Length: 300
Image: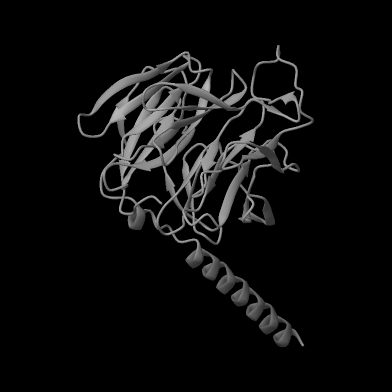
């Protein structure tokens, strides 16, 4: 009886060890497969809080400096930084549409705007059902031109909330309607969709979780699934479908939700995007600095 008990216990320990090894294999560090040899480079500094990097058609990166109320552009060919918008309404998340317009979540002005290449700014959304938005934070534009954006609230206690919570919205491709598509999250923030327009990832740092949804033809979202037990400020996707989240470092998750890489940055990152002429440069906004990292993979 004693021998059998020990043997059974030994088999149980071995089985548990094998399970741990299997999980370790699944979660193996794949950083070297994703990141090219080299270090994270600081391209510019002296900002107050950088956010919202977005790639234009030439691979340049445009990003916001929220407290200073400015939007900047990093030219990948010249390596020069310019200011492309002053008095940005506290612009946070940014994204270029197919016409080259820069769509921005203006947290201070509490609206989503579109700025044309010649500098004309148009308000796309500032209310939902007649009530002022909270503070639009991050956005993604789908292949049809519809815009998903998150609407939490950070700071600005002097502005009363008119909405009944923190939600996710969709601006129709014709820009004529605003629909609430997610209403059961704690405090949604980062958002990104797949290039085929089939899936949308929404981070909920209020619950320290990120979810993935299936996008329907009318822009509505169904089939919510928990993607990982981590929230995020901003996020992006590479060509393999890996999801890049921001925390104290940039955390990379496989399409199945397993963490496969950690990218350390001198300052805590807020947001990320792929850029450069070949989409193989990872641009990182991180507090007072703006950084880049050469990658082995392309962005979507």
